[in-house]
Image (cartoon, rainbow, N blue to C red; front, side, top):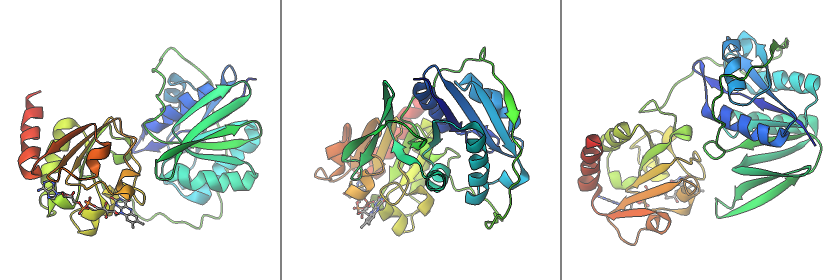
Length: 321
Ligand code: FAD
């Protein structure tokens, strides 16, 4: 049965986050020959609408308001609720980002609908959509079968491939007027916290450091390697607790969950709480001086050695490529 699926695009600094296109691909799969409707919220976002169509949406609705210039849970919930009321879709797909994680449960509760959170893949079997999501810190996967009724789903970035961009696609772009009221949250300042400028949760390469770095200054070694590889720097909680870097870089159960193509763990022991945030990376390289370190159990490639010797050599070699 064909379905109508809404996909909530996420824009940051005037550009789409990749997960928007991945969510559009997921919506396309669920909708089959039905309709994928992109939804864009913010200020001056309408000019980006066609991009969502190039990546698989059939039409796009924009909700423009200065009150949506920055994310607030109440503002986004009001805007999405209005669009859902107007469109009466079968499903709504968002990225499993800070925004998606926050607003999707709120809306699901408001509509008394189902919510599938943090899906890493999906398949369609007849009228059913079967989502797969990790549980127990990534040690197992569960399948959730959605049969009918409105359902919200958030998808983990970097897991569902976006469709190829097709600039020959065209579709209607229309605006929806929503009177955003009663905002209790006031955003006073947005502070960026990336060292390399690459967004950790969407980076295809991550160089992460642990307590083995021994000093905040030594994180420069990781900055250099990440820069050569076009990647981002992350960290274990051990490194954050030791004040070698900001908690914004923390990866793991209580930090960010990442799925890059390449994850280089430097001086990280591989505690289960860290592994929970990175074990789905496509290729894992571990550098540790202790051959018994747990991180080697999940690594595809391991280098047993002193990071202060190995990392500069890797940086030099990658510079030559
Ligand atoms: P360590 O365990 O101290 O490991 C340092 C490693 O560096 C060692 O393996 C050592 O052999 C190696 N090393 C030292 N010197 C060198 C050198 N010169 N060259 C090469 N290798 C060297 N942790 C997270 O990371 N993320 C989380 O989200 C998280 N959430 C948690 C939630 C809870 C409820 C709890 C209880 C803990 C959580 N932790 C989390 C903490 C976690 O249990 C570990 O304590 C932490 O991951 C350890 O950090 P680490 O690997 O950097 O440090």
